[in-house]
Image (cartoon, rainbow, N blue to C red; front, side, top):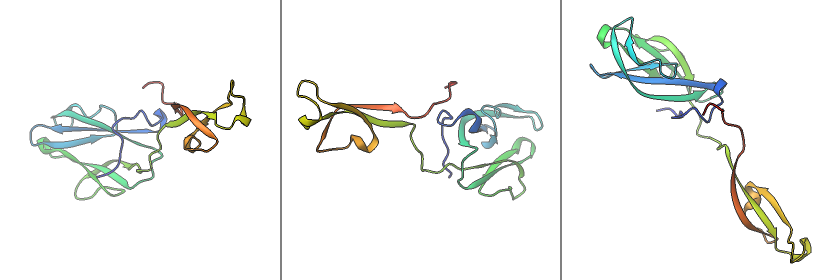
Amino acid sequence: FFPVLRSGTNIPADKRVPICISYNRNGYYYRFENSVRGCVGKHKPTGTQWTHAQTIYTSRDANGTAYCVGMKEAGEHTRWTVQKAQVCADGFRHSFGFRAMHNDYTSPLVPCCILVALNSQLGSKETPLQRFAAGKECETSTEWRVVYKLVLLSRPIDAEH
Protein backbone atom coordinates (compact mmCIF):
# COMPACT_ATOMS: atom_id res chain seq x y z
CA PHE A 1 0.00 0.00 0.00
CA PHE A 2 1.12 3.57 -0.59
CA PRO A 3 -0.25 6.92 0.66
CA VAL A 4 -2.00 9.01 -2.01
CA LEU A 5 -5.02 11.33 -2.12
CA ARG A 6 -8.51 10.42 -3.33
CA SER A 7 -9.02 13.98 -4.56
CA GLY A 8 -6.65 16.37 -6.26
CA THR A 9 -8.13 19.51 -4.71
CA ASN A 10 -5.46 19.77 -2.00
CA ILE A 11 -2.67 19.84 -4.58
CA PRO A 12 -2.10 22.82 -6.91
CA ALA A 13 -3.08 21.93 -10.50
CA ASP A 14 0.51 22.23 -11.78
CA LYS A 15 1.74 19.75 -9.13
CA ARG A 16 -0.95 17.04 -9.51
CA VAL A 17 -0.05 13.55 -10.67
CA PRO A 18 -3.32 11.73 -11.46
CA ILE A 19 -3.41 7.93 -11.53
CA CYS A 20 -6.49 6.54 -13.25
CA ILE A 21 -7.45 3.01 -12.14
CA SER A 22 -9.74 0.75 -14.13
CA TYR A 23 -10.45 -2.96 -14.39
CA ASN A 24 -11.27 -5.49 -17.10
CA ARG A 25 -14.44 -7.41 -16.20
CA ASN A 26 -13.11 -10.43 -18.14
CA GLY A 27 -10.57 -11.72 -15.66
CA TYR A 28 -10.56 -8.67 -13.39
CA TYR A 29 -7.18 -7.39 -14.44
CA TYR A 30 -6.24 -3.83 -13.45
CA ARG A 31 -5.02 -0.91 -15.51
CA PHE A 32 -3.20 2.23 -14.30
CA GLU A 33 -2.67 5.32 -16.44
CA ASN A 34 -1.07 8.68 -15.71
CA SER A 35 -4.25 10.68 -16.46
CA VAL A 36 -7.56 11.65 -14.88
CA ARG A 37 -9.82 9.38 -16.95
CA GLY A 38 -7.54 8.01 -19.67
CA CYS A 39 -7.90 4.41 -18.55
CA VAL A 40 -11.55 3.99 -19.56
CA GLY A 41 -13.02 2.26 -22.60
CA LYS A 42 -11.33 0.18 -25.25
CA HIS A 43 -7.55 -0.21 -25.16
CA LYS A 44 -6.77 0.02 -28.90
CA PRO A 45 -3.55 -2.03 -28.98
CA THR A 46 -5.16 -5.06 -27.29
CA GLY A 47 -8.90 -4.58 -27.84
CA THR A 48 -9.67 -5.02 -24.15
CA GLN A 49 -12.51 -3.05 -22.52
CA TRP A 50 -11.81 -1.17 -19.26
CA THR A 51 -14.22 0.14 -16.60
CA HIS A 52 -13.24 3.13 -14.46
CA ALA A 53 -12.78 2.34 -10.75
CA GLN A 54 -11.10 5.42 -9.22
CA THR A 55 -8.67 8.25 -9.91
CA ILE A 56 -6.14 8.89 -7.16
CA TYR A 57 -3.53 11.63 -6.91
CA THR A 58 -0.03 12.22 -5.73
CA SER A 59 2.15 15.29 -6.16
CA ARG A 60 5.17 16.13 -8.30
CA ASP A 61 6.68 17.32 -5.00
CA ALA A 62 5.96 14.04 -3.18
CA ASN A 63 9.11 12.55 -1.70
CA GLY A 64 7.82 9.21 -0.43
CA THR A 65 8.72 5.78 -1.75
CA ALA A 66 9.22 5.51 -5.52
CA TYR A 67 6.80 3.30 -7.46
CA CYS A 68 6.72 2.24 -11.10
CA VAL A 69 3.69 1.34 -13.16
CA GLY A 70 4.28 -1.29 -15.78
CA MET A 71 2.21 -3.07 -18.42
CA LYS A 72 2.25 -6.68 -19.57
CA GLU A 73 0.57 -6.94 -22.97
CA ALA A 74 -1.17 -10.29 -23.42
CA GLY A 75 -4.30 -9.75 -25.51
CA GLU A 76 -7.41 -10.13 -23.35
CA HIS A 77 -5.14 -10.85 -20.35
CA THR A 78 -3.28 -7.52 -20.66
CA ARG A 79 -2.69 -5.99 -17.25
CA TRP A 80 -0.75 -3.37 -15.36
CA THR A 81 1.16 -3.52 -12.10
CA VAL A 82 2.38 -1.06 -9.45
CA GLN A 83 5.76 -2.06 -8.02
CA LYS A 84 7.92 -0.52 -5.32
CA ALA A 85 10.82 0.26 -7.64
CA GLN A 86 12.19 2.88 -10.05
CA VAL A 87 11.72 0.54 -13.04
CA CYS A 88 9.27 -2.36 -13.29
CA ALA A 89 10.42 -5.98 -13.39
CA ASP A 90 8.89 -9.46 -13.88
CA GLY A 91 8.12 -8.94 -17.57
CA PHE A 92 6.21 -5.67 -17.11
CA ARG A 93 7.19 -2.84 -19.48
CA HIS A 94 7.65 0.45 -17.61
CA SER A 95 4.82 2.96 -18.31
CA PHE A 96 5.40 5.70 -15.72
CA GLY A 97 6.58 6.30 -12.18
CA PHE A 98 5.44 8.30 -9.17
CA ARG A 99 6.30 8.90 -5.55
CA ALA A 100 3.97 8.21 -2.65
CA MET A 101 2.76 11.03 -0.44
CA HIS A 102 3.96 11.27 3.14
CA ASN A 103 1.52 11.07 6.01
CA ASP A 104 2.76 14.45 7.26
CA TYR A 105 -0.20 16.15 5.59
CA THR A 106 -0.78 19.76 6.59
CA SER A 107 -4.38 20.90 6.43
CA PRO A 108 -5.08 24.09 4.49
CA LEU A 109 -7.33 25.10 7.41
CA VAL A 110 -6.06 27.02 10.44
CA PRO A 111 -7.94 27.29 13.73
CA CYS A 112 -8.35 30.94 14.75
CA CYS A 113 -10.19 32.87 17.44
CA ILE A 114 -11.21 36.25 18.77
CA LEU A 115 -9.88 36.84 22.28
CA VAL A 116 -11.08 39.31 24.88
CA ALA A 117 -8.85 40.63 27.67
CA LEU A 118 -9.63 39.31 31.17
CA ASN A 119 -7.55 42.01 32.82
CA SER A 120 -9.36 45.35 33.02
CA GLN A 121 -6.01 47.15 32.56
CA LEU A 122 -6.04 45.92 28.92
CA GLY A 123 -9.12 47.97 28.06
CA SER A 124 -12.16 49.31 29.86
CA LYS A 125 -15.08 47.38 31.32
CA GLU A 126 -17.40 48.94 28.70
CA THR A 127 -14.96 48.37 25.82
CA PRO A 128 -12.76 45.39 26.61
CA LEU A 129 -9.70 44.90 24.47
CA GLN A 130 -10.20 42.23 21.78
CA ARG A 131 -7.76 40.69 19.38
CA PHE A 132 -7.49 38.08 16.67
CA ALA A 133 -5.26 35.03 17.24
CA ALA A 134 -4.37 31.84 15.38
CA GLY A 135 -3.17 28.36 16.27
CA LYS A 136 -1.72 27.84 19.75
CA GLU A 137 -2.57 31.39 20.78
CA CYS A 138 -6.21 30.24 20.98
CA GLU A 139 -5.41 27.79 23.78
CA THR A 140 -6.12 28.65 27.41
CA SER A 141 -4.58 31.80 28.80
CA THR A 142 -4.79 33.58 32.14
CA GLU A 143 -5.00 36.98 30.41
CA TRP A 144 -7.36 36.26 27.50
CA ARG A 145 -10.70 34.46 27.01
CA VAL A 146 -11.86 32.96 23.70
CA VAL A 147 -15.13 34.55 22.59
CA TYR A 148 -15.31 33.20 19.00
CA LYS A 149 -13.70 30.22 17.32
CA LEU A 150 -13.05 30.36 13.58
CA VAL A 151 -11.48 28.19 10.92
CA LEU A 152 -9.78 29.98 8.02
CA LEU A 153 -8.23 28.80 4.79
CA SER A 154 -4.49 29.36 5.07
CA ARG A 155 -3.57 28.89 1.42
CA PRO A 156 -5.42 29.15 -1.89
CA ILE A 157 -7.07 26.09 -3.37
CA ASP A 158 -7.15 25.67 -7.13
CA ALA A 159 -10.08 27.68 -8.56
CA GLU A 160 -11.14 24.70 -10.74
CA HIS A 161 -12.36 22.85 -7.65
